[in-house]
Image (cartoon, rainbow, N blue to C red; front, side, top):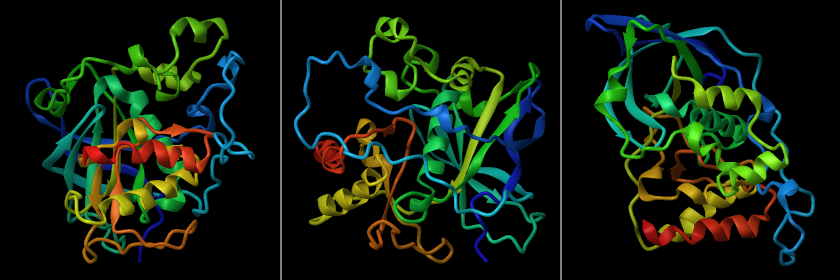
Length: 311
């Protein structure tokens, strides 16, 4: 039986943390709950100078789609035991590995093949944004997004180190503390300070955090998406699903952020969209730079389609 997405309370992950003398440490992560105000609506209306009048149809008349109410049961207490597996890929905010499900895991809990996204030390805020969007888009997990089983936290001690951080460094020198969350990146810091606008206290705290390790546990996707005669229409249909939920992914559209749906079995089957009724064979990845916006569906889809030529 397929488990609810919130069934896991804790994850013990072997191979992710070691003592500074090189000895392995069995690391147990605990689910970190998300707050509704962690992500704010873009564009920021309080910064509108009134000089620019947008064309008719730019914004949704009814405003942004509210943060979705979960349809999941109460959180479960499953303890998932994993071992860090083969490196899959990395990017701005995270490093992705296969996750081997250890034999001492409770067998009646049916998980698909899994991956672990290890959040970079300087990108805890970005990891939190991604987790927030998975929650907001709960209804599209297994439709156009991977199923996400949670965002989990481990408090580090000075005697522990995370080899993945040094083995797979990022070429980008930015940090969340310098850049801020995506909804504020297009504004000058002086504009924000003048209007007393900024991230929530938790997001500000996470931008500065350096003594925590966060992971996302998700289902394993299929192969990378390849161009083919109908690829643009397939991509447009997938990004439209997110646009219907007031989410714009155009800041981070690229080939390695789109994969084929997992093969079932051993993966879980595709789900039809509750928004359009359509079944998709692709999955969209990396939500850290997503925007929660009251732009119209048409504007969001146009933004996304303008990047399809980069595939």
